[in-house]
Image (cartoon, rainbow, N blue to C red):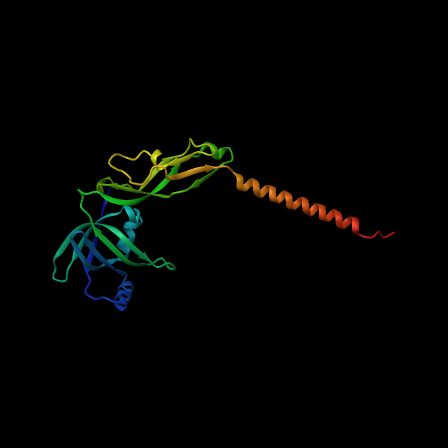
Length: 220
């Protein structure tokens, strides 16, 4: 797993006005903390953080955070993004939480599940349905992956993939229950019901039209 460097300044001013000014200056308020550290209020460049998250997902980004204080001292820490607050309308970053990690201690993270291949059942009219798009894993930081590819090409209609069916890479484990379903190829019952409903409506309309025609008075 690649590391990304990010510079941060220790923040001395707090409050909504200070945060608004930071965002106007293309920076966002942040905080650093960990099992043995913090919390330390920070500011980071919005564009620098965006650059990292364009290359990797928030959940799997390992960052070498370089925190500069006003006295010129710089403290380095290896962190992950614990939380990133985003404006729901504009998509702007509002605040970031950086959590310190140790490279020799396991971490827990949610990673995406990517279904690979076209199931046999889909070619026969079935519908591939995602049940879970993420899985919670535990591993050392250098074993962390961005996503997990799951081959579903062998699934027929009615078949499913469960967590216990997934072969996890070496050094990665999950505490989630094995019977939980990740994906399933469902029978096309919804489409069939819709077609039957359309046919039924068309039949009723034709019957009503015929009845109306019989009731119309003759012009003779």
